[in-house]
Length: 227
Image (cartoon, rainbow, N blue to C red; front, side):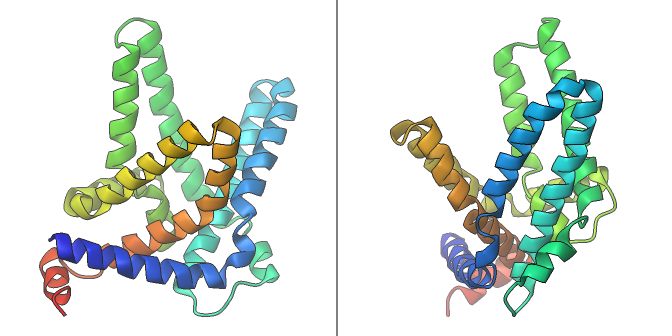
């Protein structure tokens, strides 16, 4: 199984590299989105609840477009063009919005329980980590599959992790380790800046790994890894 998993990661790295060459123009987009949302959040905070709702819609609109472009970079064989950026606007917005809404409800419920003393801060953190792991492939399901809503995405993500968790978890461990080292030794702002530049290649790698893991059973992958 270890050999097959290593072969999977090599294949995903190769496919992610090819996808990156087709989508180099999208590389700065995650940083631009984060900056735009931060600036918009500061301005919209003055509008109270209405401002928060507008920010939520804007967040879903931008992240949906970006996930659509990630899927296009992985699935197409031609480079992305400026026209593709315009065509991406509005894509996957409904899926992202419904998923973010469900996670917002969960966080709100946990926060209320923590404030009322029903759960401790440590339990609150552990629940969020467990949920993040169990439903981790949500972004890949959004840009690789046709989903109808947040509950459908969560159900598919949970079933996928139940079947393919051993192959997917090493990616999460390495990601957590890299984040820790960057923030520990590069400092907060420099670490976040480096993470921003790594975000697009990392999303392409996750998408390529998701697709590679889903291509055949664990037994067939172990057999292919021998050759």
